[in-house]
Length: 189
Image 1 (cartoon, rainbow, N blue to C red):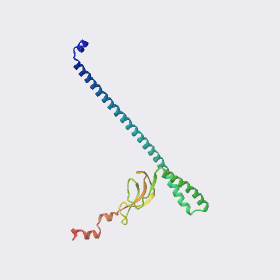
Image 2: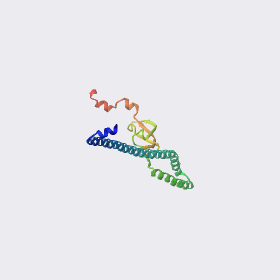
Image 3: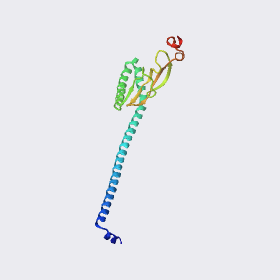
Image 4: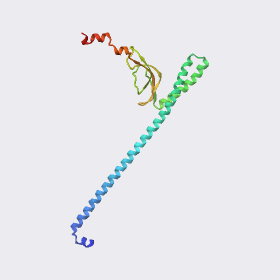
């Protein structure tokens, strides 16, 4: 019967059916092409994300390994500073170790790891670890008075916080206003 129906349909009707079928196929082809392009974009984004995560993981592993070597390097620096008052023979040995220390510093520099100076700056908990707090009126609150051990950074990331002594306003200065502040207060006039 279907053949009889086809024969009964006019050529215009058959052309319209073919045209509609052709449009449906084009629409379906467009949808598949769109899905394909989206999948390609997703795959490329995933590839880039995985590459970035891999690079970040490697960078963190290198920084963590370097961080483990910083304490012994600081101990070597401290030991070499004490050799200045030693005998000539010890000074010659120290010169050799100083060269080795210089090579270690070059390696740190090549990896972008730099020591930063803290004394005289303001305490930043992202960069410093307060080992001692001293009450004083001679320095602004939060000023670093002494650096016990260096801090190291790689880019914007702190690898090792500097250990420091920090100034804090004395309790007497913060509780009682100074004579000058009392004289300038309009309520006291």
